[in-house]
Length: 81
Image 1 (cartoon, rainbow, N blue to C red):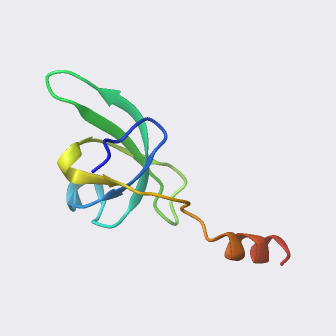
Image 2: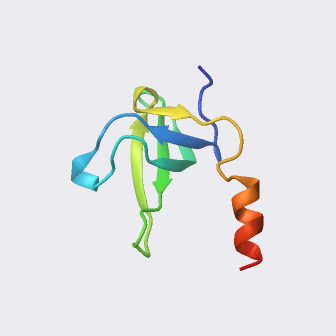
Image 3: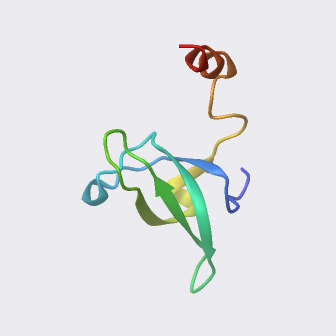
């Protein structure tokens, strides 16, 4: 499994109910913390909210998403609407 890097898209694999973040949500790694253990600051944008939620997560709470997060056909169709 690839270790997350800054600007990687990651998927949450554990619920964090106190932050209203749930398994399966996609976020972006914004920074990496190294002490006392490696942790990742991840930014999530919930639908319907104007502000992002940031969480400091351990590597066992997230998985790096490979490939594009957008379907190129959907994006191009929406641009013409």
